[in-house]
Length: 262
Image 1: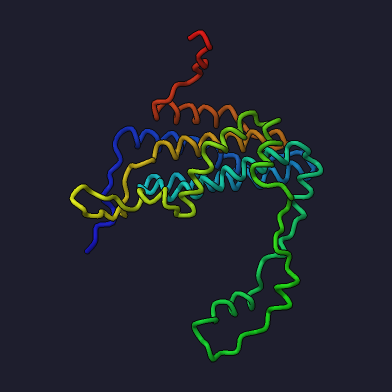
Image 2: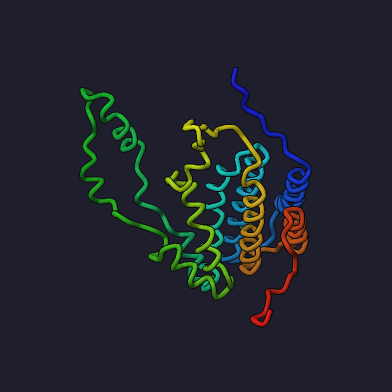
């Protein structure tokens, strides 16, 4: 019988998990008590992103604790996209929050269309509904905003200084993980000098720390934007847990950047 769980976290990883759980205790405490926010669409939209942020952070934690940080990075990619989206909404809160909330994606296929697509090639003699007209009616490209993620980040950088630079560093790596690109293949297989190829499928501590650090960083950025939109959050308590994650991971805290003379 295969052994699925072979990784046992060490003390540093356990301390890291505990710090993230403390942050989630704070966040879930907000939800248990019931979110309070100002009347209006921006605050309502912000509250939806708070819930999504905390759910994703907890899912990232669970995967990392199970030793599947690489897979957690697909969820982390979504967290980064959410932070950029909420930052962009913050640049013109009333207008953009309303646009985001009222958007309905007409590209979504119907159940009949999905069933027809699945039957093609597997049941060649089965009648397939004619969806050509419906497909022609569907827009080829539709988003709630005409801007790309990078364009949204450029505008969001006004209220989230550094988000554009952060996106440039982190997002390509996370996209590689999500899409299974060749550059991510070392996470799944490793060639050895003797010519053998090792399949890397068992859980491990690989990339756990960097994944959790980034998840906390982007969670704080998202929650800060939600608070700016009018959601009542106790951010200092969450940020204190964030500091504990950084310290446990061995990252410097409150370190001034070196000057040109240094």
